[in-house]
Length: 394
Image (tube, rainbow, N blue to C red; front, side, top):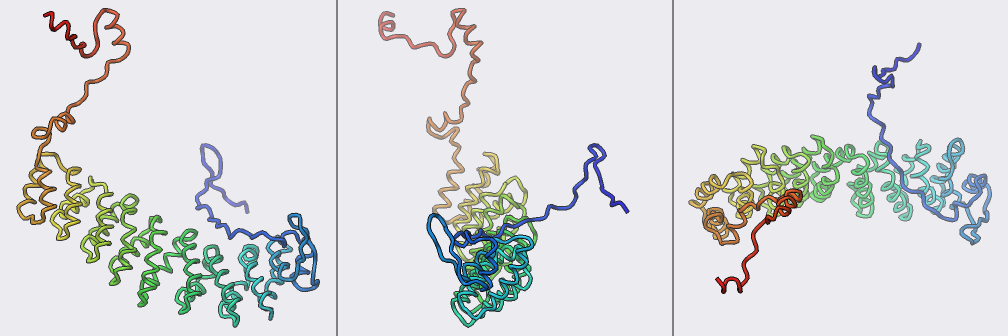
């Protein structure tokens, strides 16, 4: 049976409806003398069949041992990579600490060829008896989590909550990288972390929201909203830093979140809400109401910020009426001074330079018209002032 292919009736070309598959680049393969090991000797050296080989790397001779051969497994591709996969599994279970560490160095790159069982061994080595191996396993998790989110999901979740700082730090580095490569998966981790009782976990999770807020997704916006409602001020501060950016990318959502943050007890959260309001398109009805209501806010900083936005919303006459109404109940000297400045119509009562600023300049005379007038003896522009001698003569 011939497979049906939908084609464009105008061009006859296949219509592509599926979204392109995302391809995430893995970590860069490190360079070293092991890159010069003969291709045919890599597996023999990595498995221990041969103890030593000599290579020439950048003008110098180097002796290569088993650990070097294990690192060189990353150079294998295709059918050879499948054989190298078995060799790597053996290295990860070896009794020698250095061999296990070498296997962890090769794991992120070999997993791109074949990942079977590799992450099971990574999970085991994170609890290895040797602290050296545990550190190497943590670094390996930080490199693989952004590339293999499904394979490392449960491992990463456990390590993020580990009581040892040195272990959870690497996991958080992996989650930070995951925000760049798979923001939707990182959002799931952050969602669960924001529900934790541990304040430090919630605070760290909220600090990553700015990395995924660019993803126009309702889930991400919900995460920002939940973090803004957290009892911890540090968590709310981290979430509030997303607001100015949201004002440009998702203004309707930013307005809703700013309405909540503007009444926060923490001044730094309020400051971010003000920055968000200043960046909003005030033509939007809800944004306009938010600014007008903010002019009567209990916080002086909020009132001043919103009053400064009023000239963008109103005509001069309406603006003066609004300023007069606000002055009736205002007690703060700074706010009163700002409102009084809105009452002054500098076009009529200002200084000479302020009045002149409202005068529109005369349109420039086209060059063709200028040449015609001058050819007929006329003058374009103001006539030159008479000389002092001519005035005395008169």
